Image 1: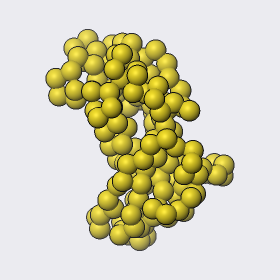
Image 2: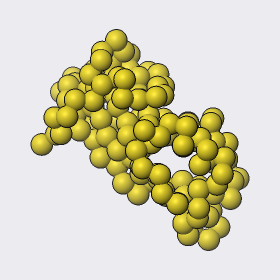
Image 3: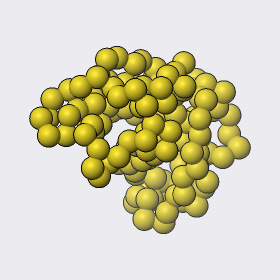
Image 4: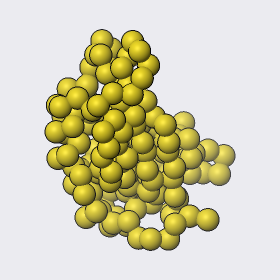
Length: 144
């Protein structure tokens, strides 16, 4: 059963717009659950690239998803406009747990919320490493 704790717009320091697409709707007439996870991944990585300088193609450090979960409160359907809130809830030496909120534009309460965990890994060795300083600084900027 979904967590009923209200997640509200003001709980997040950062938002990214997301365009819903016709193909995101499932046979039940709302956005399919797998699409939410795609939004989580896209928003977290966009922030790491833009604010922390993560080089996803050639950098020494990569961020691997090791956990994700989502609670759904109300349906979203194409063509609704959506924005995704992002915050850091826990920052470890080599990992970060994000809190994510999915909001229909103009709504105060989240349609869905979840968590998403990255572990930072040496690209060549495949072993966890300390979060590089520029990424750590960016993550600290949105920590709640």
